[in-house]
Amino acid sequence: MRLAQYGISHDHASGKARVMKESNEIEFAGVYEPSSDVRESIGKSDIYDGVHWFESKEEMLNDDSIIGIAAQGRVSQNLTFAREILEHGKHVWFDKPAGDNLDEFREVLELAKENDLFVQLGYMFRYNAGFQFILDWVNSGKLGDIFSVRGRISSGPSNESHWKRWDSLGEHSGGIMFILACHLTDIIVALLGRPTYVTPFSRHDGNDVPWYRNNTAAVFEYPRALAILESTSLEVDSGKARRLEVYGTRGSAILEPLEPPSLRLCLDTDRDGYVKGWQSVPVEPRPRYVESLRAFVADIRGEKTPDRSLEHEYIVQETVLRAAGIM
Image (cartoon, rainbow, N blue to C red; front, side):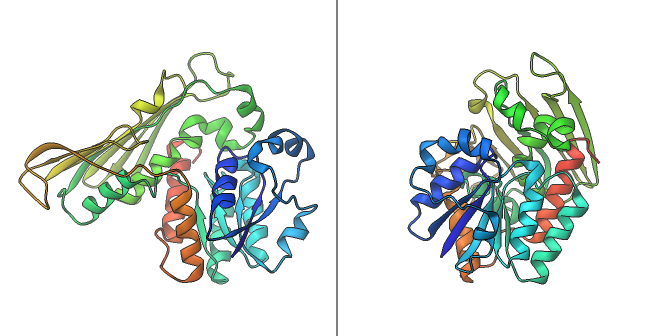
């Protein structure tokens, strides 16, 4: 199976290129980057050594041997890229967030559905073993009724190279809640569904460029639950404090840090091989993107059904925009 990459400006672009290069399940057909300046800068990375560069998007899009394409441009570009990919009958490995025009994203998903094509969003925690454990225990009812979820995912100060690439409404108006916290928004929607109300809190603090909303939070209200999500770019050594907390009537689970995953579980009674009270649960550390590529390939081959529906992808994007204060 031959896959390609459209654009290299996204923060995940090099990671996606790496796993496609290293995969023994697919042939990495090459990359098309529309900007010569971007190709001369980011494209000089060692990751792209030996990779074929398409001279035009038509060379890539019209190649019938290419089955799917990773849309890895700027957030402002990827909706257009995804539409072009689908219009040429190819599946889309679509990086996050899915732009900032919800109506246009709905049209992209409808195009995929009409043509029996797959769209997988690039939320990197979906195949993290810690998150998968929590999702399984929630969906199976082992934690009882979920009444509270808390998430925190932050970074250190962003650098000038990011600011120059951020040119979408979401990046400018939604800030880090839009760009980074979308990963945990995806998980919250997987746990609880579409929130009834979303209240965003969006601030600029510290020394980043003045337009960057770098100190943010959002409250998600459900009929019988609350979720609180926090994200800032002001935090020292933020990776170790990234976490997800899930509280139910029969138990709780806390994942901290997220990578490599460290999981604690609390139960009201002995259950499923675990004991009453708090305990550590060993979980397998996995590299980013590898399992999502395997799932994408397996979906295309018909070996499984997608792990997230197109409707889930739509609800996540809607919720990302609501949490970022864009709608």
